[in-house]
Length: 220
Image 1: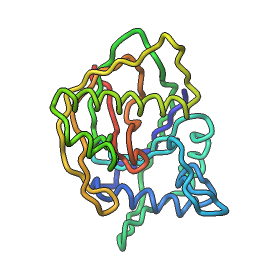
Image 2: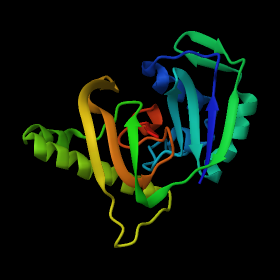
Image 3: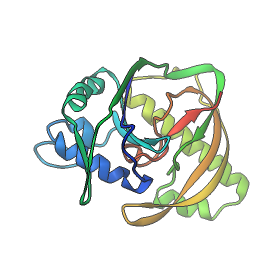
Image 4: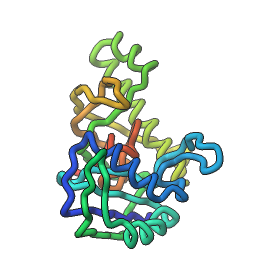
């Protein structure tokens, strides 16, 4: 699978600025629904796995694209983007680094370890209540099921299908933390997990991955 990473080495942003960074880019390149995931005619959200995601990598803002279609948009962003506006602050872009690579994605017979480099929001309002009412063992099993569902949903949108005998295995060591999402406090998780599914570095799973949540990196 093709993956592109566009990073801005002279720009410093906080994690809380990532959604504003995404909003600025989405408005600047409004004609590309892959960036903002809203229907160009109706303005309604398009529910799909985001092919373009906004991150902090080593404290620097970055945009990641996967699949040929999304990567092709990057040439326009790379050429035209000369500033980033966050609220009332305009930041000139002097240095842009573009890396395009082929990455592996999909089911594997091997087990890989990943760490969350940004909080994973795996629970919604409904299953959080259920999560809160059960013991630790059941909590762990529930998080395994949710993470498996996240990976399967991601695979489906990226046209990666598992056969009936291919089962995703998950083991994890996670810690609860509080995050702010759209003005609301939510429970999220940091930590590590193991799975038999190859996931490219810095892609996200769970809720709000286009805003930088749930980004992971393989631990070698």
